[in-house]
Image (cartoon, rainbow, N blue to C red; front, side):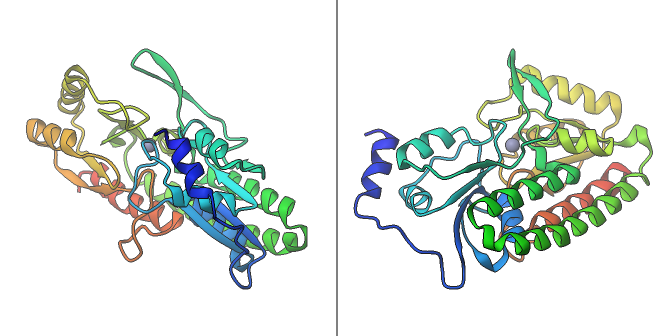
Length: 295
Ligand code: ZN
């Protein structure tokens, strides 16, 4: 049976849910990082369901019947776009959702990369805090569209949250500045830090491409090992939602130490140190800066 059919069956008998008490809007966000940003802008007026939860991989996610039910009951759907949610169109189609689908990365200066001979757009735009500000603005606009009465609240929330994002962005810039330029080289599991690298002047290399759905070839890994040796890269990082075996191999063969786990495409569970967008960013910086400096 097709996934779309399963979703439709799950919808039969489901009723349109009203927003949780006190909330005015039922919203769905596609993944945990975006869910946190939506929650900051929406505040108490928005009852939010997030599809791909903490420590889970959005690239290869398979929507569940419960996701279809949540979307069916929602007035607005927030997504990253840029090809991140490969399952998106299928889910929207299967549920017959006809509310606004807000592409929160809208306006980001995106970049493309060559992956196995194909040109693909890098979806990981949230890994620059300046892009985070664009996400906030797009979310505010979307919520004002479906709940005009709440617009002043969303605007105030967005303003306060944007100030927090900007403050952290300034801290990140100051921290990275303490690392000599030639030492700003990091190896991660998959290529999720392109926007981070561009924004803050750090070179990220990864055995896996922009998505986690393709496997690195032996030649890719070999080249990376050569590069780690030649450039003296000291900072090797795992990611919370992706397979770390390749990194462990690179570590064994080069002697470079794995410096911990970065949060790339998903937040942590509450209490694990990266349970919000800003906490995630601060956590990554705390690990990256001393590792790059070789401390
Ligand atoms: Zn990714």
